[in-house]
Length: 350
Image (cartoon, rainbow, N blue to C red; front, side):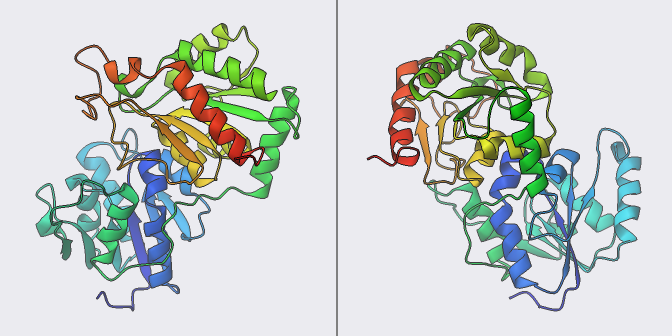
């Protein structure tokens, strides 16, 4: 068991939105294990925005590997900033060598994390993973990682937090675009980080959106990052502009509040999928090359649509063959899954 007298704790966050959402039960475990400690998250700007104001944290400290903290000199600069805070415990959630380098350079006396990537000597206590189950979800992995050090909590579901003001601003933004607070909002997220293999086809997303919106009397809102604007524009054209395209036009905090406002969500395996799941938004997630067990949305209001293909999940960024895991998923597959889930969660009918 880990000793209980740490007062200033640094948690090195994971680097992707989806992983960060799935790590939130681990953050809650840190808070419950050390209720009187000051807990600081060290995160990149994107994840820092996502977890700003999370109840498990006291504050967020940002690093930027593209600018101020780029390269070796940047890491040394960050280490000096971290050292000035005089943390007495560093909890390293990612498995990379780089993620433990700064806490080591900052001479934080206790540094715990997984023994991986040749970094064991930089840790003071290590988690040695033994034959993980093929059925294990990423949420459970983070809980096991911290549990090895006696850091645990009852809660297992990912959680995010937005303020009342952020929620109201999301409602106001939609009203400004003609979508009232009472209308059904169908969110469409056709993008996905990591690579093109994770993405279902924009024309099919558009067809699904058109059919469901007509059936439910819903208003369609399109989401996506700055580098997904061209992709989302295809859907907007297919819908003849009968939608609100917010791709590349929101901060992470705005995205969170807008997704929470959605009545239903159709998405690829992605960060926004995990955001929607954390807020309990009913959703259909389309999986192809990624692990539908390990990274499934943690929600009883989520349905995964996928086809049993021999080469899936391959976990490749780009499909080297014919993308059959995604071409095999039809518009009808997604529409039927959405309608079944909608009947239970929106109309209350079985």
